[in-house]
Length: 72
Image 1 (cartoon, rainbow, N blue to C red):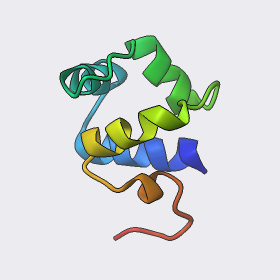
Image 2: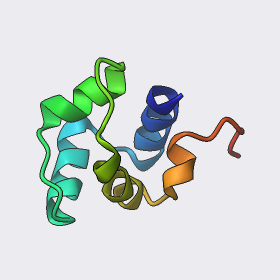
Image 3: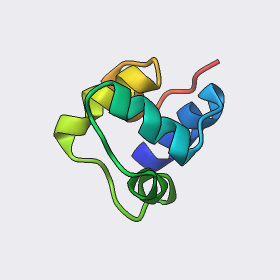
Image 4: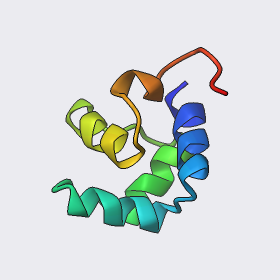
């Protein structure tokens, strides 16, 4: 579920792995673009402590990263 929502939210913001990594760095949560790419592909998932920064960078709530509902 995370992977699907994460990809959708990144696409909605027009962010690439490099772009999201840069936003996370400005929020004090540096992460490599390669790690973001692995999140997008479902190879790995972020640690729980990263979720608030990811949500902030994507302009959503943490729950939106895992929501099963559809968004308009």
